[in-house]
Image 1: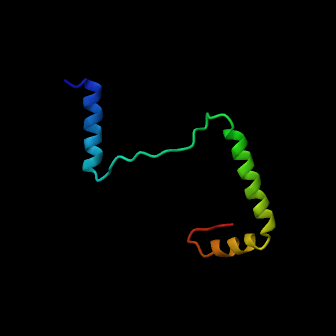
Image 2: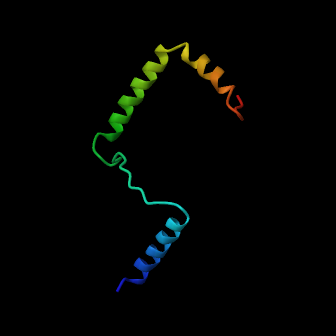
Length: 73
């Protein structure tokens, strides 16, 4: 026989399925892994360097965003 907490969880999941939802498992980076913060810094530095080299990109993005409904500067 299922425990009361397992029964509640199953009822909750059944309700979500009845609402048209389905379970989904996703894999995300392990932020506790050694070297994670250093890799974030490395990738951020690369992105910042690429942005600095693309001086014409910022005005283009600003122009594009003015076409988006609700955008305010």
